[in-house]
Image 1: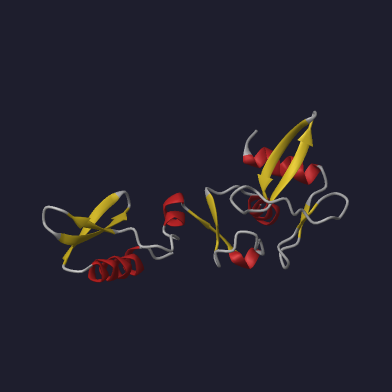
Image 2: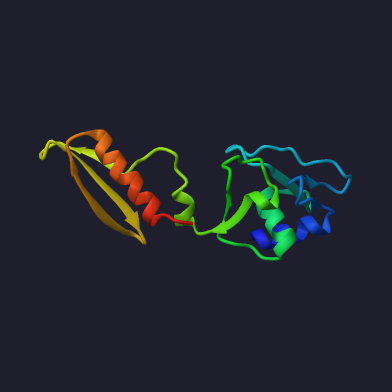
Length: 150
């Protein structure tokens, strides 16, 4: 079953969404609090004795905009904060930019230097070789601010 079909089924089954609080309510008016393994809130819909799971932020987006998008990002990084002001539609690549740890640098054994690089539009841009890990990390973070603008 596609995500859009799950969203439509959830609406048929009486699920609703409050954009100010970010809560999804079932047909009995209870807040859906089931936590997905990755920390997101999910809702469960039953059809013909089969259970389907749908992430609450995807349902919220569909509820308001009547569309399913590639990725939905939680702007503040809190996975259970589904207020519409905290959600935005982005690409999968943009969603990968949310990593809090810098991964764009490594120790080059042969050169005996720290190298930094960044991926942009599926291409790798070499940022240079550096004497210290901190210099390489700084170069990466500066490039991240420049290239990974959302």
